[in-house]
Length: 138
Image 1 (spheres, rainbow, N blue to C red):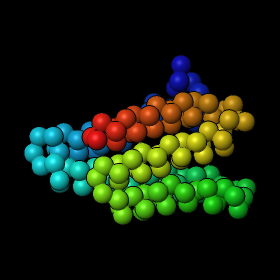
Image 2: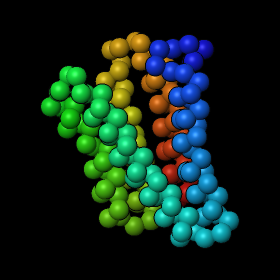
Image 3: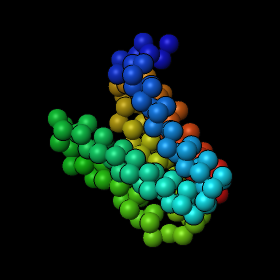
Image 4: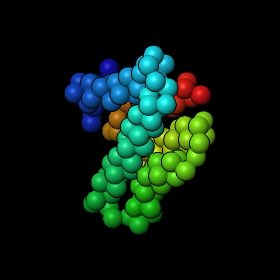
C-alpha cells in the first residue's frame, strides 16, 4: 500500500488531494460564471504552486549544497514567471511544461533512492492530474 512507504502518510496524501481543490474550483468557476476571472484564478494559483515546487527542491538540497541542484530548483519558478508573458492558451502550455520539468527533476533526484518510491508515486499522480487540468481548459 502507498501509505506504508517511507515519506508517505495519510496526511501527505490528504494534503496532496486538497491541493487539487483550487484547480478544480477555478475550472468550475470559469465554466459556470466568468471565464476570464476563473482562468486568472487558475493561472495565478498554478504559478504559485509551481514556484513552491521549486522551493521544495531547493530545500531538499540544504544538506548537499549541490550548485547544480540549486540551479535546477530555480527552473520551476522561471517557468512560472515566464508563463505570464504568454497569452491564452500558450500560458497553460508553459505552466504544464513547467510541472513536467519539475517532475523530471524529482525523478532524476529520487530514482537512485528506493525509499522515496512512495513520494515519487504520489508526485507522479498529482503532477499528471495537474497537467491534465491545464490541458483540459484549452
